[in-house]
Image (cartoon, rainbow, N blue to C red; front, side, top):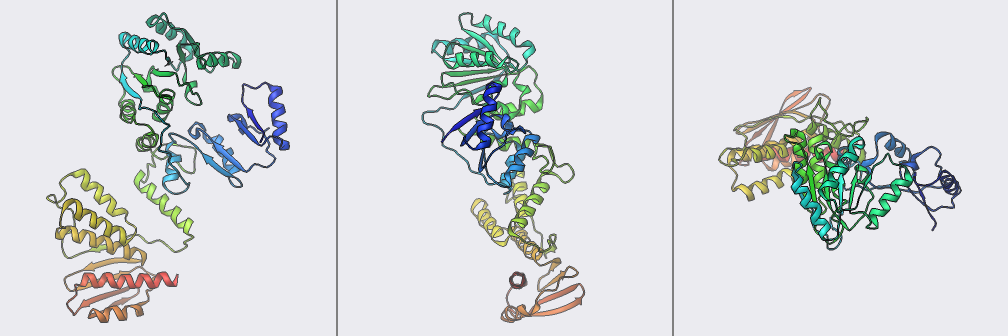
Length: 467
């Protein structure tokens, strides 16, 4: 196979030759930067697109890629996907695979958030010099980067030091980066140009000036420039005092997640902090303000599931369920408010009876035997799930009777109830024909609540079979 490379480090003549070879199919694999998205790049027979560092692409670039996705296979790689991309995977719109096994002999990166202190920075620089290593010092403002470089030089006068940033010419930047990779430079004062695609195993100390100005995913990517060998790596995030509350939250997340392969956890926290964005617009982060993030995500997931399964049946809202006694999580059963809220949220999201029963088993295992109030809460959830699939508007359960009112336009197959209700000695009374409202009167010994669930299950099975 013939492999070509396309980037700004190629001369115009070389780029023209490579583009001609790509167009004629002489090049089998083309590796490049954003340059590959230019209009003058024409592929003869493109079949596979691999996007590395997917989080670096903006909306316009992704729109260009989206036009290619219809006819080719696409594999996107990222250690920390942006919130919208991550949610697209979590909701099932995209497939996702996780690589959790780190390279052999790698060690977690020691990460610390602290203000600028000459003594501490001098010790960090000299510790790396003493073990024959190299250091990244990141200052992301080109207008002051040379001034900061002089301050760093004063902390370690004996170190060989150079500056690298994106406004340098391609040749000059290439010379500096090659010298650093070859070990001819001890300290590289640089901008965020080092964020991606740089592998220097001998560089194991990273100092980031004004880390509060960086995003969570970006800092995680920058931290990945060190710790690429068997040596212990150190990352110092320098911040002013005081630091903004949002920035402090981001930095504490990075300080907490230091284990190898924790990019997925960092991306999840970034999703929580920034929101999932607008799936159909240009926003790649941000909250769905009108309906709330949780409701927005559930709506998207439900729609995706329906489209994937090809379901065209109407979706009804949850019915109003009223039981004879109270239905809630008592304080003496689940005392922690956070746990209680989490359980209520899970219960509101259940999509089937099996999920309710799984939650029932979990509660029994974690908190002990279920009080009457909890049993009623779970029974009400089962009735909501069954009723929603049948277009039930209201369910009213009393000691020996249960009334079910359906929504206008829905007519269940009542004939399927004859066998189950006869076995359980239950009489059926039709209170109203439009919209249909029926009452189950329990004559035998079986509880009316169990009989109602059996009846609704039978109606749902008949409805699914007819659909």
